[in-house]
Image 1: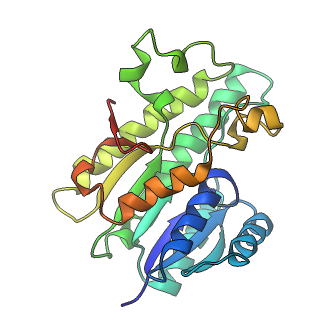
Image 2 (image 1 turned 180 degrees about the vertical axis):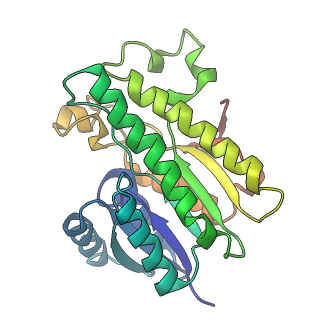
Length: 253
């Protein structure tokens, strides 16, 4: 049986890197396409993972989710090389730090986290629909949950510096997930999910150790990768169209 083809955006670091490693280390039944804006960085990440004990296969792919020409080229490559796609993990995102003002921050964050992600998903969807059991997983965040945000006792949603753009982008992304679910779940085999990876080490918050580790509170992104693996192995099929999290639960939208 040929391996399942899994494409992960933003795969050169953080959750994307960890998920690539988790999946490739699990079984020879997976071929992971590690996609990122910088081909040099994703090739380095691929080589690092290949230097460990893995069972599956890895490929590197240049993909800037804010560049239509890059998207078109990536879709053409996957179509010509593999003929279909079994899993799309929409992970690439920015956190919003380092911008000079609110307008530039929210425009950049929305362009990447919402517009770019939605355009990439739409572009790869025809290849996904050629799979017998396709999965579309959008890496969201509990910070974008309207349900959690209305709980005034939940400290996640108070006092987060420059966090409004990121939070709003994840709320918007969740609607993209719901729309995809409603548009395709009955007429096709596509299963769509919003997925909260939890608070893990990531450069979304900045590049200093304090930012990456969230002041020491962030966990290992391998945990996030294992949650995504559980989805594509069918363990969360009953929760398709929902906002699942790395702890195995489901968040309210």
